[in-house]
Length: 279
Image (tube, rainbow, N blue to C red; front, side):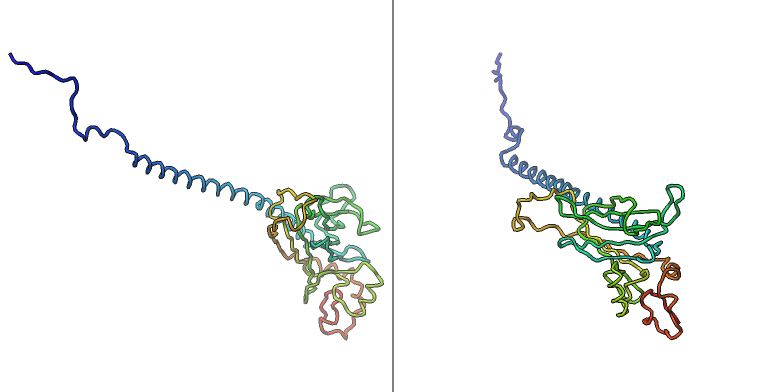
């Protein structure tokens, strides 16, 4: 009886021996994975950077919107501040920043105590912040008729991070950078020249605010020179026009020139001091 010897190992074909990846396949797959991870990291980094860029600007836009809404609401119900100062708007600067201030009275006020009405003396002004170089907007309110119409009352902080505040005044014909005069002598001298922006209340006020786009950035140290500082981001600019709806009614009772008008004045330019048009 013939028997054949069985070997403990069987020989397979070359196809059966390919059970893994070759070196070239590993290199290609690693490169593709690296590209995918790099693209994912770049997208994630861009999203984080965009979020850091947008978040402070959203806060700035919201603060500017609230501040301009408050000023516009007060101005729409504006009335003469006093017989001496009906409406005061002074153009001034703090360093290189525009920092105008505004004094007037308004009927846009809700009484908070007894013996108070809807009349309130009001001021808007800015002060420079320490350390940042930006400005802070404040509002002064005095709900009583004070002897000094330009002081008294309480103040409240409206918004931080301003890089400029400008008020412009419209008398029905032109825009002016200032309105009113605190010095009676200068007022009398300028009245001879028929300056329309010396008395009365303007018909509209244009408000322009420059805001720091990134107020969260820490200020540079005081030892850092101007040449070493990087170029700062341009400010965000916001602008609106508030029409003074009570102008005509208020001027009829407080205008000093209202009782001195004669029938000889037939053109609007002959009575520009209080903005009233006589036909």
